[in-house]
Length: 411
Image (cartoon, rainbow, N blue to C red; front, top):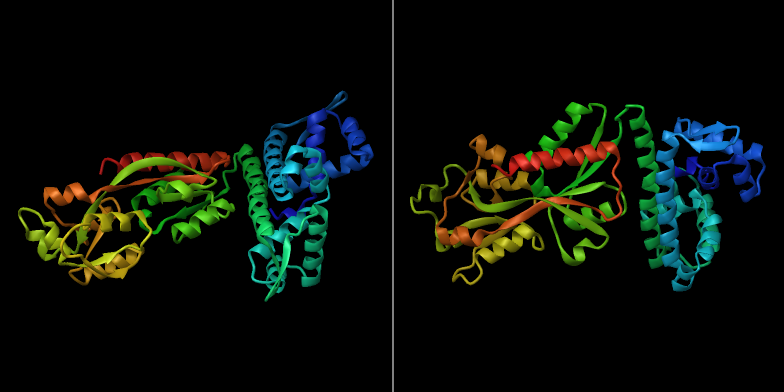
């Protein structure tokens, strides 16, 4: 649901009616007439395709659908306010009225203008992707800057662009607007329509059986659900997660500074293995391949900075002959193709190649106890935003992932 189709003041009016339990009291508080407030509420109900308020002689109360929307709107409002408070500085954080007054002047159109510009290379590109004119977008951005009272724009070689403060504000506000999408999905769930979309970020070497089994399990129970899977590097996918482009990230867990604003859930430990084609010469070793034998092989290695590459480097640390890893890729498809057509090896995990091993496409090379003790493992899990509140469909998918992980742990 595009936020520009909604009126932020009207949504706040709905929240006030729920707070006071009365249209008349809310209208007096907002300094508007009761009929105009009723019209605004009717527009919200039409836009969300749900009855949101039950009206009595003594007042009004939110319906079940209204309660769902109210929770999401409060979360959205808190995130909008928190982001603006950080932008305005410490003095405003001590005085919430300053934030409230600034935010009261901000519209959804202005918020989306900043978000669109932050994701585009120029005003022209932003206007094209937002379906508006460059002049209208420019006007919305400058109105937003005036309403906030702080510079959020800067002149660049390509024209106007968000400055550092503007980019941070756009990121935080983009996450806030995902609450509206969540609200729409949850209102459909109340009606028994599990038609929501789950946006999954999956690291390249984490997709095989785990994600496939979880998605199949979900769609068997809810065939109208939509699943979108994005792949890429951890840096790209974690950034998409932070701005709300995806809901969860599946793969090897990170720690430390990589987790700013994120939280993790461990699914299982995934031991590493040495993988080659079925006819690889080292498969015939009765005692297992030694570290020296492995070091003399040609390798397909993963990109530096990934957990599996760190484990690969640690395996040969201190060995006399460093291995030759002339090919670096995080693509399992490419890795598989290369080792199928050569005697190159790769460090993967047995669970990553479960399908290939079952079909006799790839094999795990037997190794000595010394090598086995040095191989190590990676922790596979789910990464989410710290304050993410999943819908019922998303919560169901998380259970599917946990079930799939429990079954994989026995492989």
